[in-house]
Amino acid sequence: MSMPHRYDVEILHLLVSPGHAYFGRARDGAADVPTRDADRVELVAGKGVVGDRFFGKAAHMDAAVTLLAVEALEAMAAELGAAAPFDPLLTRRNVVLRGAHLPPLLGEEFALETGGAPVRLRGGRAAHPCAWMDEVLAPGAHAAMRGRGGIRCRVLTDGVLRRGPAVLHSPVPLEPQRAGEAVLRRASRLP
Image 1 (tube, rainbow, N blue to C red):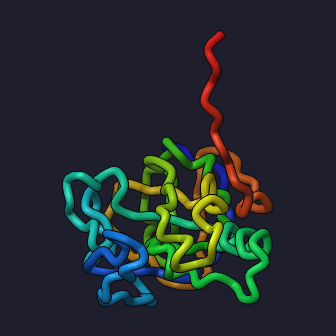
Image 2 (image 1 turned 45 degrees about the vertical axis):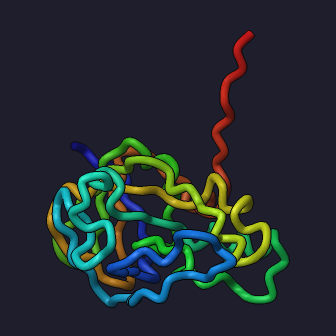
C-alpha cells in the first residue's frame, strides 16, 4: 500500500488500562482501575496494545486501539466554556495526538512512526463518545464530542509507539488544521 502523504505529529499520551472504568450508571462513579500514561506501548498485530483492556478480545480486533486528536478536546473545552483544558486520559483513548486529522483515515491503512519501524493500522470506525463524558469532562461534553471522538483501529503490524514526535504516513491527503473539527454524518432522507 502506497502512503505518499507524511505529516509531523506529536504523541502526547499513551493510555493503557487493564479494565473498563466507565460502565453502569455515571452517578455511581467510575470504577477504580489502574490506568497508566505510558512513555511507550507495544502493539501486536491483530490484538492491540499489550496490557490494555481490549488486547486480544475477538469482538474488538477491528477496534483494538483508539486514536484521538487533542485539538478536539481543546475545541470542546472552548465551546463549553471550561475553565481549564480537559484531561485527555479521561476519554480513555489509547493514543492522543497533536496535529492529526483523523476522520479521513476511516477505512484506510496508515502508519505511525516514532523512531523504529512504522506501526501499520487500519482505521475501522469512529470512536463514539459515551454519556460518561458529561460526568468526567463537563456537562455537554457527550454531545460536543460527537463527530470528533477519534477513530478505532485494527493493528496490522507488531511494533512500538513512543510518546513524543512522530510521523503519520497516510495514503490520503489530510488537513491537520482541521484536527479539532466535528465531522457529523447526516442520514440521507428518502424522497
